[in-house]
Image 1 (tube, rainbow, N blue to C red):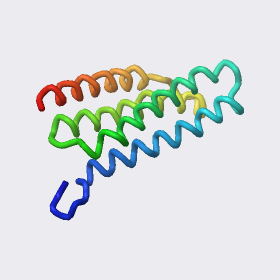
Image 2: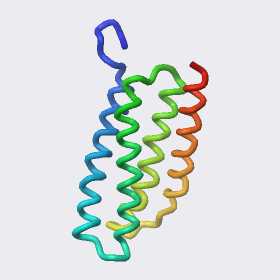
Image 3: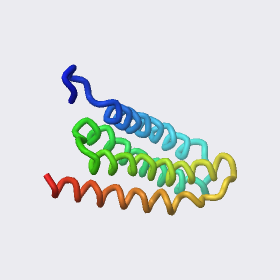
Image 4: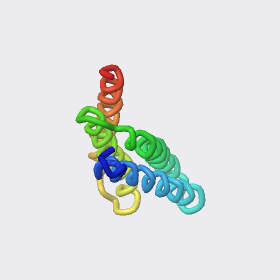
Length: 122
């Protein structure tokens, strides 16, 4: 925290992004349940699950993040969710390829490894 008691801008942006991801994931789950055809349902549920879980993680972890390792891990986490879940959702709605999904998944794994390293360093 800075002297005013407010969280740094990056922490606030990451936490807010996490909350928006979680809210979007709830909507995506509802769409998958009630609007998607059978063959798309599981892919959309997977995208929603990844987005929700990592959104909650971002919202919870970002206010406590201090230093480059922690902020880097959470920034990679956000990029990974956008890459993975975004690619799956875009494929469903716009017919785009899911080329970014494996990159997003890799970024998510890297983000969690960096977060673990950061926690061990403290």
